[in-house]
Amino acid sequence: MTAQAESDRPDAHGDVHDGLHSEQGAIRGDRPHRATNPVIKVEDIAWLEFEKPDLDAAERFAHDFGFVTAARTADTLHLRGALAGTQCVVIRRGRGSRFVGPTFRAADVADVHRLAKATNGAAYELREPGGGVGVDLVDPSGVPLRVVAGVAELPALPLQRPLTVNAGGAVERANATQRPPREPARIERLGHVVLESARFTQALDWYQQHLGLIVSDFLYFPGQRDRGPTMAFIRCDRGATPTDHHTLAMTLGPGRTYIHSAYQVADLDALAAGGEYLTEHRYKRSWGIGRHIEGSQIFDYWRDPDGFLVEHFTDGDMFDNTLEPGWTPMTASGLAQWGPAVTRDFLEVNPSMIKQIVSALTAGDNEFTARRLLGMISMSRS
Image 1 (cartoon, rainbow, N blue to C red):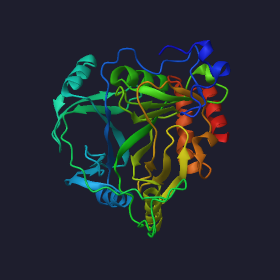
Image 2: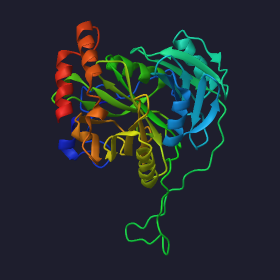
Image 3: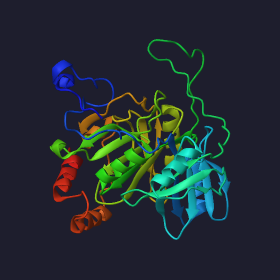
Image 4: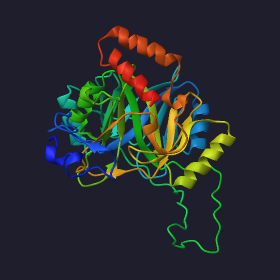
């Protein structure tokens, strides 16, 4: 990235990011938001993999949350959304519950082979539904991931139609009422995953260089702009084709941790009525309903029976590859434009976090230092 000239800074000619996605743009000396010559450029996130001991319970929640079962064996559950594409989630039977890793989709099989060669890996044929070719990798945080191509798409299923609304003085609906059914919000597709890393900078560099991902927004701890970002919202580079504001988001923290994953639904009514359905079935809402700042999506966060955080979202930002990154302080109050105050459950303030902090500070071989801890505390209180 070429840093903005002084004449391009907000105090000179107005904020070039005003009304777009963040409070200010980059200044001279900020880290690049993209690699100059990445190995490949992935097109999207394909699916996420988990392990859980009870596939029946996992499938019940999945259906209540809005997924459809694409395939199931004695030991594996494949879940999909309604849009044409690959599965969204794969759950394998395991002794405990854990997030395994993400799978990204490359443009073609040649890209998979190119990435395998660059990383001293080996491309192989996938033997699960959809086929295709993949390569298994590990990022600098230790998170296993896969990049695939040539996977057969599942056909589209009936979609939940967005409601016709009377807004802005226009009458689009006359002599008809609104009665959205209280039913599961139908998942359309996987949108993004958020991961925590104690080696945030190394991991970010790796994803930019190897997968061609570019940063939409950088966040930094209050008072620590000079020490660089502590969170990045990262999108795919598909040229002039707009893509999700973030396909992967990464944040600096004491552990190597799955934070949440997000799944698109039709509109606000689908999201809200689906939330009422989940409440009636005694699932735990973590935080929502509200609208984010970075990404702008309307959100609603839930805990599945194993404690994993999952999000319904709608109306998210879509960027092409021309937009420069935004930079803004990372604050708890800055997580949403409107909605209820962020909860302790969403921030995951719990005893396990304390153990991770002690372990990271004691190890001393990562980016999570005492000063970063103070920044994190300042962020959570702001």
